[in-house]
Length: 233
Image (cartoon, rainbow, N blue to C red; front, side, top):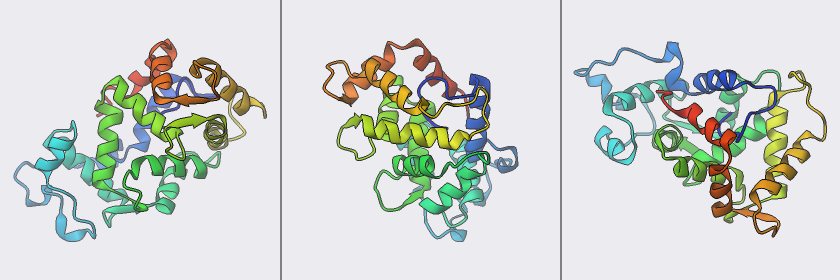
């Protein structure tokens, strides 16, 4: 569950980090091959995919990953997405494997849109590593900006209560009905009210990116949750 600010319902920090590791194809044990520096295949196995990714050197410049890390990431990505591209339905299907107790479809759609920055209806390897670089290697401001973009569903530069309620409902749907402690029906709305009480500094009914980042940086729990993404790879 990428970028739930604070502790998600029924999840300890250890459980959240374990789930994050499982969600990243590059971190699954069966997906990590041995990387040979001299192997021709290590240059992305270009002949077997429909989408031709950019060269390693260019992706190194654009992200905060090393050549070897990009090779391993690509092997994991290609294992899940053999064509080199993943559309929204496939993304939802992959994501649902990790939340069998609930319905992750809506949240997965929001997350897909955050990774699909050019809005062409698919996530390429370039899209994937660009987002992952921010999440795992970005500064706190970078990560919070990425989270803000995730929550700003219509991309108009501010988060409304309606958008945040949609996000929270999708998270509670994803967690399912059998979490402990049991979730109350009004919990998503209460979470939204708490969110706006903290974040909406000028009480105008929307949260701007400046308000969001400033409020998050002053919240120790949120700052600790950001650290879950450190040293994942």
